[in-house]
Length: 608
Ligand code: F6R
Image (tube, rainbow, N blue to C red):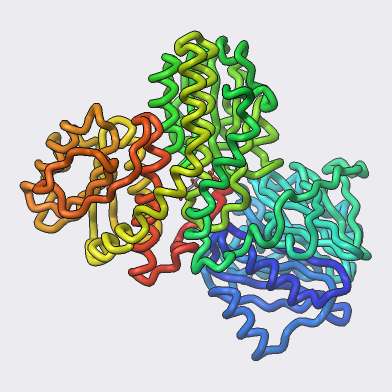
């Protein structure tokens, strides 16, 4: 998604903007640009391509020199990636950068054309906003911004500079996230904290409809209605090192290795006297007892964590769980009752479709629980209850540690709910809880045990166009995530299939040498899964099997075996995830892909 930054202070503004934008690269982008006050005028530099292309361009043309300005990385929505469509965009006296989408930009453009404003250079909705601000500008920036905000529909954030207000940056948030960070005599805006953590850990979270004015190294805030606001200064509880690669070649590999710590940090505060205790998140045994049905709603990887959650909650707590893709749930008119619980899982807490589900559920009487990684994010703030996962910043676009901690929370919730509903006794709950407490060591051991084999097997995948992931039960839920991880960073077409369903159509796809990755960690289903592996093997497939170290697998059925530590069947997803992540990682590396920033993808999907 697009990234916004801004700066007012004594440093070289261009350097600050570019360094901050580099920290937002993980969000995905196709062009970049900055606007800086230089000798009282706004100097703009922008280009299609990466930040290195912008730097090269500025080296040739001259770098804007100044101490206040705005910057942007664009992820194209309206208009192809090109120099002219890159941000910033300008009207005669106003220059802006923009994240999000203006839904009614066509009507607004027509309004401007009808009023003889016809100087549009780009295909973007952003330029329409710049022109509209210019149209209404009467020398009072706040009045002008408020006027325009009343006309815009959509979710967006803006960084704005007015040519006749030098050394001042204005910022607005309407849904899309934006923070204002306060340093010593300097102030920043950014779409996300990692952009500016190098300069300061202190930040304000702009709320929907709030306007910030950055001037003289400080900031003031006002509401959409023009009322001055006092805001709480927050402090990030992690530092620049957590957002750096720390010696790993890619963020993704670093984040895979961070999983044991992430799980430990997430579960430890939620366990008391050997039993799960989620009361600090607003969840008590009484509340858990009351729920009749559960809906888990999320997107992508987070939805896959929900799939594992469904199996575990239904098995242990005997409550019906429906898992939905957020963008589908919104439009299917779901039957939600007042005694139901809707769980939204989201790493970023800003995913537009997941956020919209919260609004939909409001008014049904059902309770909402957010499982979110980013502190203070929209979904976390709007849900009735929130369980924060403590994975730390996840920079690689492909989610790994966030998924792992989402799984750990799903287990804790299932254990506590099953106990609260009297479906398991205290001893069982203690035993299960002890197992999850041991997971950080088991995950660590698994990484060491499988890394070489995954690296080797990945070399067998690089020349394929298409492959299948198969599994049964929890292994099927898990294979969905394995398949997504592989396809998104290796660009190999991959589908996950319930192993027992293959014969009903998909097996016709199997041709000589086609890779089939079978996840076979569920001993109770092992025989049946092995039969399915044999079926594809008999039709020429190259089979790769992920199973525990004791599983009895017929060697004739498998080309490559990836053995993982054996633990209780129900917790196997937290172990089996590791080789799936590493297979995806090394396949992408071996193909020479941009592992951390795969093409066409963005880290935080704030548009629908
Ligand atoms: C894939 C991936 C995405 C996200 C999805 C939801 O590796 O990261 O599928 O899981 O876009 O994002 P969040 O969790 O931020 O709501």
